Image (cartoon, rainbow, N blue to C red; front, side, top):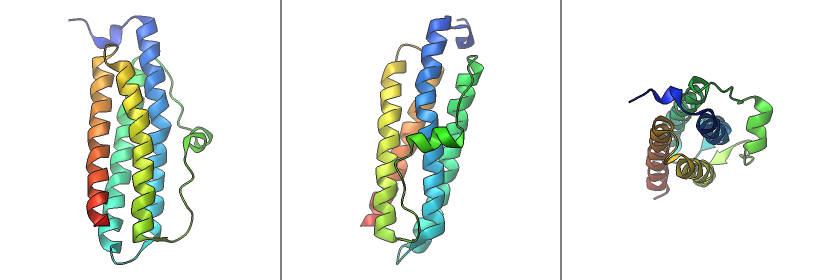
Length: 153
């Protein structure tokens, strides 16, 4: 089997474009999770403080995997601040009560999951490596959505 890096140029471009749609969403999630990490208050502070740190770290790792696949296919990626800001859903500034933090982060995760699932659908037959990378992203997002729901009680 030939390397997936030797894909037809149109397939590689299609794959890179799908990955690019997800990349700024993942970067925004990592930043939003840190915003919650620093500003959460309430009875669930410690659990959410620790959980949001894990979400931020994993979102950065997912973004890295997605970006590196696009670059390996021969395409530049764009995760500059203005690109990320254009995709971001405006996470609230300032202190957040624990329930508000859970609701806001869940909404962000849902938005990122929707973008990832759309790209995943596009890549089903295009690039198995990129497809697998996005499956891992969805798995992680589902895990964190479940953990946030458990904190909500």
